[in-house]
Length: 231
Image (spheres, rainbow, N blue to C red):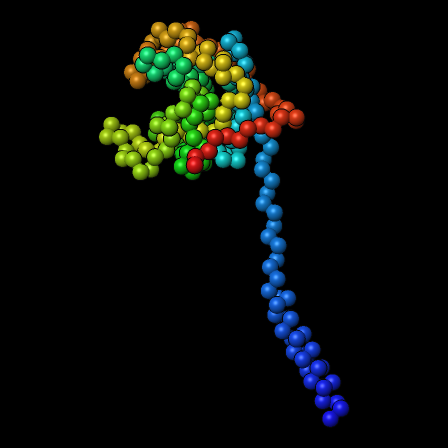
């Protein structure tokens, strides 16, 4: 009789230990930390009108930013120009400026990264790649002056009956310095001859040379703004 409480206690302790083992096995394994975001990449475009600094959205638009950097790192944009200033009718501070090599010495085209995939938007200061059909973009790019949501991808919209599409343009960065220079270029005279009828009245004459395009360091003391995203 005197041994029964001790035996019963041992049995309960043993049962408790057995119950604890499954619970221990169910402890969640900590998930690995997400990979750190890639460090910001900035490119400075030097022009006679002033300096424009672009921060690239390397995480959101890896293909398009890599394409842009091919031209930067090979110094191909040193032979380029801003050749187009498209202003909204009656406006001097809304539209876009376009630059690049205009197909001369261009590298192979890059696959299209629509804003519906990257989460970026065409807002004031957005830098985006020019194209005709999806997957034809090479060196030419443009900078938005003012918000331009009509340039974003809109999969819900019908394709244009004249051969257009609803995939928009591939935004890949934004201006962090020099929007005053962009607006200055936008306001320049556009009497140049347009090869493409769509650009009639939008060709700069003379064009604005891109003297150089180089990667530049991001100031350590300044936390750069995040690129605008949809949502």
